Image: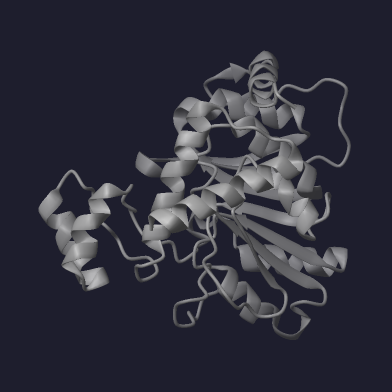
Length: 301
């Protein structure tokens, strides 16, 4: 795992260099931890719940059941243990009342083409048996059928490479962080082309939220939908940066715990000269915080 982690970090840095981005110390520490979680999660069954290492016996027991190796189970303590191996899920969107399959269908019909991007898709539902409900990328792929790869395109990012082969029309972008999302432009995802951009966890752990929102907004087409979750402490920064990047708050819900607050934004078709987005109970949010974050994040650019 140590060699794989070193290679992943090297490729992530390479992708950062392509877009002229340099993470600060806190961001790089978070990325290193995320890479280890990714590598460990890939060894597990999709959506396998793993207890916290604060309860060593339960943790080792679960890892032993999943890996079949006591050495791997105990050795995993050297890494940043995964809470679960992500199978990919639209659960957070559903919590806001969105049916992403219907959203995708409507947008394809209205625009003539559809492009979906999930940040941190994990297995993206492609390693599990087919579900009757299309609640992940694999479900979207089955739903679109013959038009997949023609007028419908599905993309997802991961910190490491989770897949060696994928159906036509589905693309994994490995070694991509939420803050470094702009690199997918060089990988065939043009600015202003994404209809729906979704993240279930990657944006939650992103330390440079300003860079993520900026990249996400640039990738979204006018009217495009952005759904992700954030810790409560990041609400002000997110609302402020969203306003500056032409995003309007739609639905939101506080799920509590590690799910945090789920928000849905829509990219405005045209930008007014002055607009304040109001977060309920927080009041109008100004612009200084986002500007400061962006200066810190891109000081070396």
